[in-house]
Every structure is written in structure tokens, then in C-alpha cells.
Length: 328
Image (cartoon, rainbow, N blue to C red; front, side, top):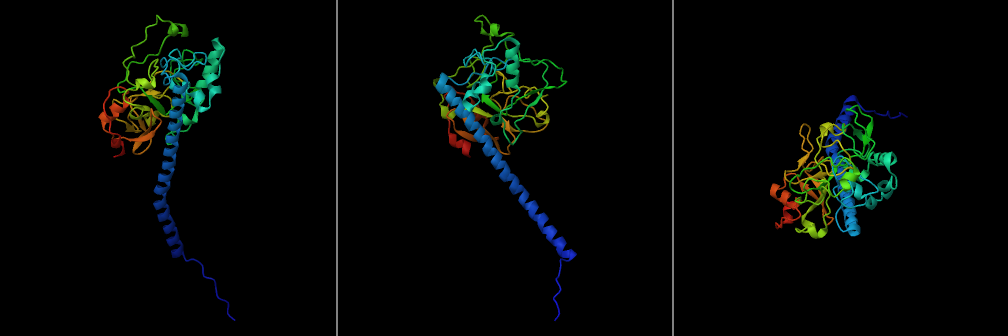
């Protein structure tokens, strides 16, 4: 009885199978990438939802949205409370409401160099929900700015490296027009003195700005029609180096374009070779995510009408808004 011989693949058949697999991989790769980006975009929106909820809890406790702090020369101080006397900005002031009370209170009761060292440790800590996962990871990044925070132990290093800092991909709404933002006073006592002359910020129509204490009642346009916190534009060229002036500081500082953005210019997708420290933007393909003052999170198209974008950045221009325009 003759045994049937087993027949293997011929070279041609093997090449055909390999070609089919290659075609399938080419067809599936974009779909997999789209699914992955969709998941990352959802995580980004969830980050903003948590930030918006923290803002709301801050309002419930203190009666106003988190202050924008003193300026880019100052970090959050655990001994200075939550009012306009707090040098740190919104990202520091909401720490107790994102389950990071211990980080917020690090250094409380200390003074002098011990307090500065504690604030430096806080400033060096990355916070996961302050990072869009489509853009970069929540890790410490180089701090090479030649001017230290006044209340930290960071020292000028002329760009030689060595220090690290936690950054943020999100910025609070500073209004529709950027106002002057200073480095701030040279000492805490100077900043707390009633005789210290602060740049005028009373005309800001945003939510968080220099020494702000904006209550919900001040949002005359309605909480549902006013930006709160959104993704900020970053030039990818220097995203990891700390060199760009609009992405050199961290999340733990006062009023500055690292933590505040404005709606006077159109938002953009991150693009190598283009720097703009005033605008919103993201690493996403079609738009950036924004949480409104009522806690709703929306994806805002890059091609949003510039006038609508400006109106949503103002809390008190009393201009009627058709929110269905955001869905077009």
C-alpha cells in the first residue's frame, strides 16, 4: 500500500502568504493607530474632567476659582493658603482636590532653606493628570532656565543641566487678551505688603490670572459658555529640552504662559518650527480638549471661528453664544 506524500508550501505560495500578511498589516496599522489615538484622546479628556472637578471643589470650599498666583518667579507655598496671597497658581491650588494633599502640604510649617528645599521637591514632581498622553509622558523634564524661583533652591546654571521639573500640558483660561505677567516680587514680605505695586490685572476677563479671585458670580456669560482649562500649544522641537521660553517652567508656578493661555488667536496643532506661547493647541489631529466652567469637556476644532473662540475665552462680554457651532 502506497503512503501519500505530504505536500509542503512551494516558494511561490510562501511568498504569496507573506505578501498577503504585509498587505493586511498595512491595512490594519492605520486602524490600530486610530484606535490608540482615540484611547489617548479619551484619557486626555478624562484628565480635564478631573481638573474641572477639582476647580469646582475649590470653588465650593473657597468661593472662587483657583488664583493664578504671583508670577513666573514663584512656586506654590504651603504656608500661604488659597487666596491672592498664594504665590503658586491654579495647578498648585487644586492639589488637595486631586488626592494630592500631601504634595500640596509638603513643607508646611517650615521656613528658610528647609521650606525652599521642600518647595523644590514639590516642583520637581510630575503629575500624571497634568499631561496629555498623546504628547508626552508624566516624567521629570530638564529645568535649564537661568532664573530660579524665588522660593525654591533652584540655582542659575546657564543651561548646564542638572535640575528637573514637572510640567503641564494644560493651561487655565486667562481671557481673550494676554496681559502683562511679571516675575513677581523679590521676597514674600514684599509681595504681601499692601504697598507693593502689582501690574494691573483687574481688567482680565479670564478665569485665572495674576492674583485672581474670580467667583462664579463674576462669570456673567454663564459657566456653560466660558472656557476653564484646556490643552496648550507646544512646539515639538523643544518639548523635552526645557529650552523654549513658553515651555521652560513647570506646573508649580504663578501666572505665566506655561500655565495660562488666551483665546485671542486661533488654536493650532503642535507643529515643528512654529512657536506661540499664547494659544491653545494639542498633539491631536483635529482639535484640542477643553473643560468649561460648568465641568463639561468638549473637543474644540482647530478651525473654530476665531470670534467664537474669543467669546468663549471671556467670562463677561455678554455676547450670546450658539453652542451648536462647536458641533459642526
